[in-house]
Amino acid sequence: MNDTVKGNTVKNTKKVLLATIAVGSMLALAACSGGSGSGSDGGDGGGDGGLIGVAMPTKSSERWIQDGNAVKEQLEEQGFKVDLQYAEDDIPTQVSQIENMITKGAEALIIASIDGTTLSQVLQDAADADIPVIAYDRLIRDSENVDYYASFDNFVVGQQQATSLLNGLGLTDLEGAPAADAPAGPFNIELFAGSPDDNNATFFWNGAMDVLQPLIDDGTLVVKSGQTDFEQAAILRWDGEVAQERMENILTSTYSDGSKVNAVLSPYDGLSRGIISALTDAGYSVGAEWPIISGQDAEIDSVKAINSGEQFATIFKDTRKLAEVAVDMASSILNGEEVEVNNTTDYDNGKKVVPSYLLESQIVVKDNITEVLVDSGYWTEEEING
Image (tube, rainbow, N blue to C red):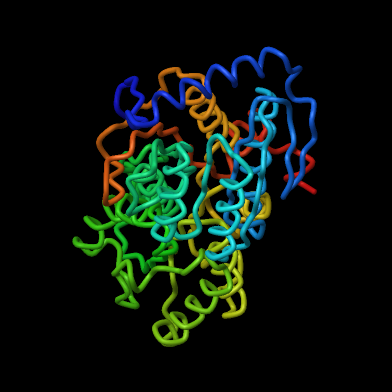
């Protein structure tokens, strides 16, 4: 990650109004007790520090529920009111929700987009109302009206996913160093990618292929299906059922000769569970022939699957820390303070390089579940073993 730098790139045309907002916000914050309101989806909650709109993509993923709750709770602790909305992966719904937030007088927007290319007009509306926008985890593309981006180092996340596969195959340790007694292979591997309308998906893919491609080129890894392009591997909306269907088709078309899949690159736990279902239905059983399967987000069902041997690894991205970064960004903007970022070069959304703060992630395997997930308070032993 780059050295921390400081910067506030809110447009000059906004500075006077933002300074006025900051004064009002500080007065309100001084008057309120903070964190006193419970709030609810679709409603306001919190203290008197002004309204912040939080747009999340869906409740169908456990991860986004945790993100939304963490952002809402931390904003309320700072005295803000919160309008938290979930769009259930429907783009027009998310656009409408953001429009309503603007109409209701939101002073800032924190947006985890469904499709990062479809918000240009509503973000222009926000800019016209001098409302700063923070892209949350998913970069919003094709708009100049994105002030900051809070996420993880998504290229590194992809590298970690690939490294977890190599570790499971016995080729490297969890840091990616070659194993002294590494098997020669070849190993059959199949590749899955995330949703093509999510900017992160290409970062995950590129990071993973940075690690895997040399081993594909030298024959250690063999993509037996021949499906090695992002477009072939991509799963729209990160849909686990679509991933299951694609895995079933690959098994039928490519492995009916009795050969076996040794590893599957999966960029998200929800896809991993769909892949596991396809393998189980095809007669694979946990044991010596079971493939090494990666994942991401440390969802509880996948942590349980790691414990049982069905999934080999996941990538833990602490959403509590991500929420803290986004909340601090919003608070700093509205209080006229500098916004902390640590990357000003890598996240070009097609219109501008968006100043970003990138967090670190961790590989989780069975042996370090307690250390990484339980000791940090993310999950409890009861939740994992229940």
